[in-house]
Length: 573
Image: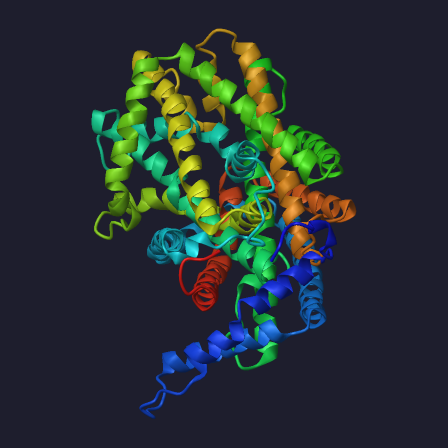
């Protein structure tokens, strides 16, 4: 085929190109060859083989479907999800308002149930996802392009990583940067408090919580949505990544509606919990640093109002302006803050901590990935407060961050997306906690009792209690508060962008009115959780929404593997 007259080529819509690509790949021919033929021995198919054959036949039929039929089905599912989401969220906000102070009590009950009965499940699940992603990345499937094979990445690597980080863990890094390592140092799960072993354990456990496992959960969602969306003519929805498992079309449709519904609720509760933490830290910072009495319900609601207004301004400019610009600003400010704390603190100590933490984290990763300590009650209790809270939080955030990563990853290969989403954020997280945590531990060891008790009582003061020991306290604290505010705005903007996609046809650019509606709902839920008092209602909201979505993620992993095994014979894009 000549390329001398490219101007003579007819311009086709992306949907038409995707349909042509699907036909070129000759799914039906391969399906018949690999699954549809009866065994030559004449023996009856085993149950697993029958299931695989059934699913393959359904996938072949899906490839033949008219695009209008696919869109009609998706429209019904999305409409049902929109109605159910609004009804359930209105019901929850009404109940939460009436429950008031009982939210903390109910949160404690939910936490005990999960830690007692489901700790093994979440540990095994998150580790299994990580192994699965490694398999996808280094197998023949890794070269599959998320989009047309000729597509190139839509965003530069710098912008891509900036948006990844701002959406994924921005607020949490500021909240826990110095507080978590110091907390584990003073109150470790198994070591002697304040000992060398406690210090080593503190950084390894913090890296475990913020490293590969969290980003693996996000990335699994991203791979499923991006592959089925950019390659298989589907809308950019979680339900698009789940194959039809049942003979009954009604059951399959119900499963897809359920998938999008629990994803929508998980986004709302997961992001609301993080916005709540960020709001509390912003209020505490204003009061702790500048003496502004904001650390109270009135202050929380005022901050939420400002964040909501700023997010609406950002949302009105679209993805390539608002979120991208804010994400780049966030990354620049975060790197400047990181460099400042590194330069004014014990530099050599921090570098040693970083190198040693990388080594210890890598060497203990396998053990930690399957550690539930059934014979150590103290560790079991600690794990409920920390590891399980984090892993369920990442699962609750997975629809939001996963869909967002998928949206900004068009043109990248599966391998590029997986390795980029796992390795670079993990390395940056280890560096961040080495710098902030290393400084916090150094200050506590130099002046015992000056930081530790305050952080153990209220971790929101951690960043500002540390910064007050360094020059330019008010200026640097002010920059930190600005960074925290922009992280909150970016999270709210990104979250409502994703919820808008889930409830309006999987639109890659949801309407402003839709994003404003869900932004207001998100602010209302956050305000009600803050009204419940303390961290417990915020953590319980994420914990409760994670369980049903974790089941959807298992189906997504199964569907991606099945679809790729049919498409890809050998090395190809």
